[in-house]
Length: 498
Image (cartoon, rainbow, N blue to C red):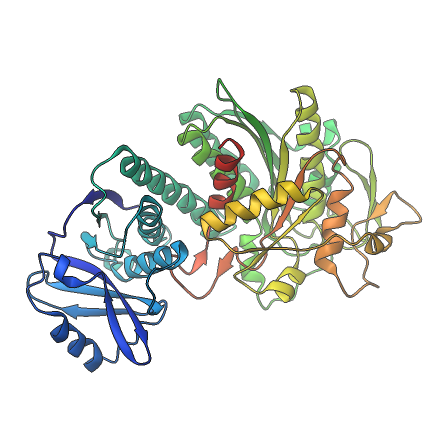
């Protein structure tokens, strides 16, 4: 986690500049004549960059040993333009930060003309300064630590807005790192119990109320989805419930996250290839918990009820069998045709619980569930764009505005009523999946969840299956857990009260 500050000029021995190209001509950003610590002229630096084969493309980082600053890092902006999007700035700063592992401090002199651009650069640095080394053994001593501090160079001064932007970037970076750490932790160490215990400690330190239901309580109270998914494992399920209640809350939101700490597929056993990535099947739960932490630290006037629906989906003599019928909280019955379509079962319990709590507390302004729910999401949208489905276009528009601010890529998907027939059962109220229907799996999963949401409650379903974990670093995103959805949920809360 990098500590951030602001200054009007670069004074350190490591400097980050932007680089772009148009028609084969390189451009340095900002104009280096405005960086007092550089004594050589632009022409000389451009000659060096051309000799090194630098192109200025997005995610390209070029290191140039120098005098004055002993090292200049050029981070790619892509095609030369008069101005760059906030996400371009964020990604360029993050890519440079990742390349600065092992360095103590760097000055980031990127093109900044307003507080929004300043914020984007600060966020990129905070998000890029990450590494996961907890399980390194003999190689841990040689591992390079992430950049520990950075100065964002701008002419904006040390205003309240600048201080606020730095604080927000550090809070976002810290809580995205919590999400990444949870996703990256091996499933032998991250179970429903350890997830709950670790997150409870953080929540209590922030003044957030915590409730944890154990397996006996879940069964006794009727949480049939979480119970059925978790009953095949020796690591019992949990429901982690966080309540952030600011004194003058203007809005009340509920977040529900899928928290399958490892998903073998149960009796619908997954193939071995790629099963190691199933430690990331709790990314939704990690995101809603970390977003709640960030909202509390930012002291936003938004009450948050967050529910992490935690279970481990394994095989044993106690595991749920195909054709078993379970009862979701609230009384609706589900025939479990596919034990590997388990995320929607735990989410159904969480959605019902969130709805019930909302009704008892004067109502909710919106409910958002977050889940690595379907492989069909990856087929439809790839590994960097998540899906959003809704029953309320106004709420969805607000969320998409939030994603425009966060830089996270989400795409709206429909919930066609004609596909609902695929969930019909002759033995229960509905089935959880239909193997006879090959197309529209992501949409059918969304329709399943929609059945547990009151029509009058604005609701969003975020399917983050592909973007939750990456095997290729890019921009401010390292290999492993990405922390996707945390920043968009925070931005949604901010917009809800703006």
